[in-house]
Amino acid sequence: MKAAVLNLAVAASFAAGAAAQPHHHHHHHKRNAPAEKREVETTYVPATVTQYMLGDEVVSADEAKDGIDKGLYVVVGETTPTFTPPPPPAVTSSSSSKTDGVFIQKVTASSASPSSAPPTTTSSAPAATSSSSSSSGYPTGIDAEFPDGKIKCDHFPEEYGAVPLNWLGLGGWSGLQFTPSYKFGDFSISFIETGVKGMSKKTGFYSYACPEGYVKTQWPSAQGSTKQSVGGLYCNSDGYLELSRPESKTLCEPGVPGITINNKMTKNVAICRTDYPGIEAMVIPVDAQPGAVRQLANVESANYYHWDNKPTTLQYYVNQPGVSVEDGCVWDCPEDHDECGNWAPTILGVGKSSDGNTYISLFPNTPTSSAKPKMNINITGDISIPCYFKDGAYAVSDSGCTTTIPSGGKAVVTFSDA
Image (tube, rainbow, N blue to C red):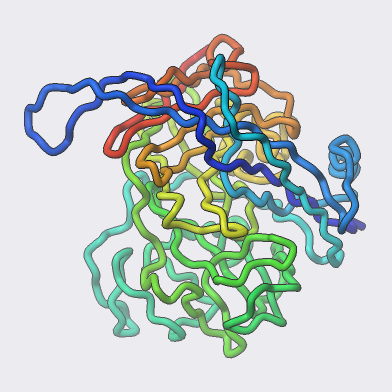
């Protein structure tokens, strides 16, 4: 019987340690304007020290890993204020690394980790933005306002832009967090039960995926009392779905544009974003098929979800070439366990800071995985410094690399044969 839940935390704060890096930026407000050279200040973020916590006690990384391997702990989330970029070369910073806790929470045996897979593909284009009328009489479409409190919890709101993940066995939802003691206005949520396949529906938060380039808008102001993230629509005691963040009337919103994936290989690459805020499983897929160019969602961190009063970014787990999203966009892969899903070899982190720059990090998924990508990954475009994984090594250092693009800039993440 699994007796505990391990929440993996990866965290860092934007720090000031700057080195100006010249690059060419194309001005987007003038037609046929020549490229102009601008100096962009690159802000590097120091890596953090991670601590594993069981209550108030520190658990060693080896003990935590051993518990996962033996099935004593079930990984259900990673509290992730920001991605963890590597330290830059030959640049000094007055900022010191900070320590972040990884919380191990006692739960009931029924609160197991999600294990089913998300969809084989996600539409490369968002749902239609023009609204239409549903049989219920309410306007529909990805830009239509969600009818608060009018749709039953057993109906997945695909007509409002949400992308159903039917094979998870959760009624199309990307994650379920049952919160029987929660009431609107609560400061925090003390009891959270993670829903799994086959469980009956209860009151709580129902999270969902959005089309490529879009991100969800719904999460409550109250979050877990031990710093778990909580996200999605709220299923009330009457069995109807309510907006958990009423200031946003739609379910999905466009992310910051400018980052695309280009797969030049003959095999697909499953890129899996964490369902965050929510159960934090890497189940939101972008299936980069051979020859495909796909959108990668990005967010303005200051204006998106805040964890523990800190701005957050998005994290994508990048699987080995040829791993389907059914197998790769899960915690525990049915095959090649040590090289996909939660053990995918590399992570791509993106987020737009309040300084106007988008930060893109490419770094190994350590200490969880020792696998290395079986392909080359190169970030190009309006970037401040080179950032890539090539011929078995990362740019900058073994810890990976971080680069930036200015506001309005573009970057392409290219997958190619090693």
